[in-house]
Length: 142
Ligand code: RB5
Image (tube, rainbow, N blue to C red; front, top):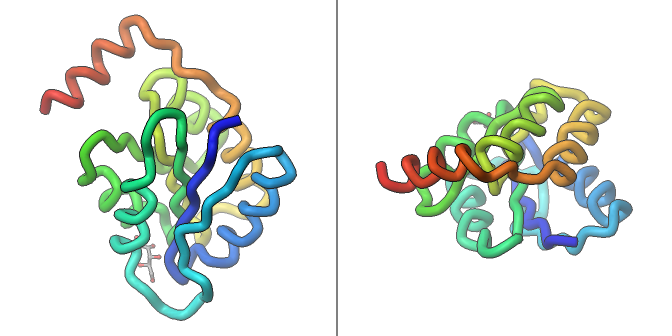
């Protein structure tokens, strides 16, 4: 089971706490990069913290109000392919075709039940490689 590093801002704090329990129940090792409370904070800090821990098969989950700020900030980090997903199909394709290494969620956009399904789809889908690898290499060369 790969390790999952999770982080949020205040907008995603409550869902982060719930997601941690779901991940532990699924058997994943979980590292919480913060924050430790729902006090207002800045999402780029936590996006950077989580992104810095993505190596090998370690995956990340970032949660803010919309998932947008987290994905923008995370995707500025070298080697990061952060995907903001609002449904299971996006989460599956983010892994299967884009080999995403961070899942971004918007806690003010989706409910807890859907968030759980998206997380499960993301973590259990494998990258398909082949032609998709060529395209990932092209992203890395940008
Ligand atoms: C915080 O109010 C909100 O802007 C943040 O959680 C996120 O949605 C940004 O993209």
